[in-house]
Amino acid sequence: MNSRQLSGFTLIELLVALTIFAIMSAGIFTIFSSFQNVKDVTDRDSRRLYELQKAFNVIGRDITQMVPRPILDEFGSVQPALKGEDNTVEFTRAGWNRPPFIKTKRSELQRVRYLLEEGALLRFYWNVLDRADNSEPKNFAVLEGVEEVKFKFFRHTDQKEIKEEFSWPSIDASYGSNSGSSSTGQGGNSCGIASRESIELPLILEVSIVTEDFGELTKKYLIQAEYANAIYTECT
Image (cartoon, rainbow, N blue to C red):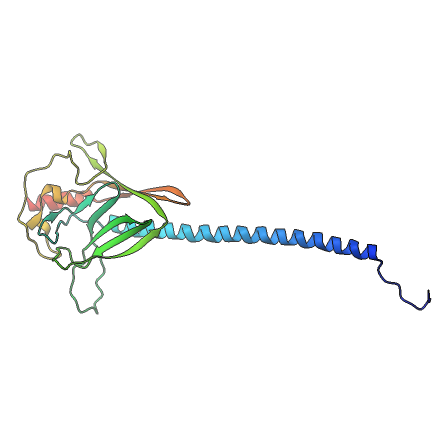
């Protein structure tokens, strides 16, 4: 061998180097893949938690602004201020902002309904309270990926005990026989169509949402039922 010739790697040294590089590359790839998977799951759960929080905020904003205002449906029949079963609920709420620049005059009260359809919890709302034949609701999905939704109602009994109801108006509640006529002004006083059954509100409305990923989530909302009693007293 020429003393001036440079010596290089042997085949064994090259194979050892390639083996070490392959092991290190596999380790780095595994770590990066695990990190990416964790990040994807975290981002997905964060988005889902945000969607759930937003949905409960929308529902809570409606429920906490519930008012004892019955309505007339498109057939002229009186519908109570709150009408609900274990999987759907419809009621009148206040606080519907009325921007000063809109041309159409409307009430600041709004009729809303929550209903589960094809895996989505939908919020329906009407632009009027007392409906005509052509009064069609608008709707949007409050939350996707919902398997089941349940509503429960809690009221005071005559013995001042709290009782759980699965539909509203309560079937076995003891009401007075007072009933009014079948007309009222838009957004005005509800005495014209008010009966005790039509304006009675529960103390608490419980919302339970069963999702595919987080299971059952439940939240209770306090309703100002004393407001309904005050309105009913004024009407009678």
